Length: 198
Image: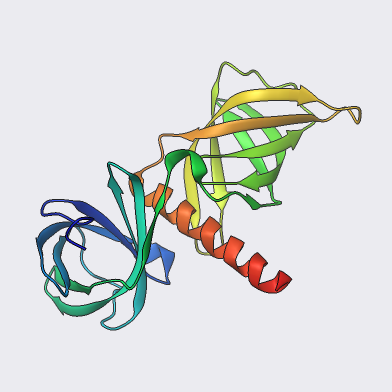
């Protein structure tokens, strides 16, 4: 783990309850794991419960599952993960995601239907010929308890024979925690889909 996690590195921790996502600074790394000081109070973080961990490195986003061995004030000890993998910026997991949402720019509101979703952006359909030069506010509803507010920038738009516009775009102004939450959400949905097919 010493090659992957270093002192002062920022690591995001995502428990089963997305709303309790936290982040921290690595204090020291040992053969058995590492200790980190949390930025926020450790509400919802439970000793011996599996969590997802993410950190940005020179090789891309590092992802692994592990558990908290010890929790004292704002300092937690994390066990070494059995395995890890890198999530390259351009290789975010993309999932089918059908939701009726709204793109907003000042007083203008466009009704859209999402087609797919990743931590980098989403594909949508709409009846509106949307101005591609603007950035639009959008709220992604991941569950009854979890919403992510961000900006959406159009990249490509095509008009189909059915009169609908299909648009690809990317998210902007996403916080690191929101991006990690999206990464985790898409990965878990993708794993559920694979399990159902199997």
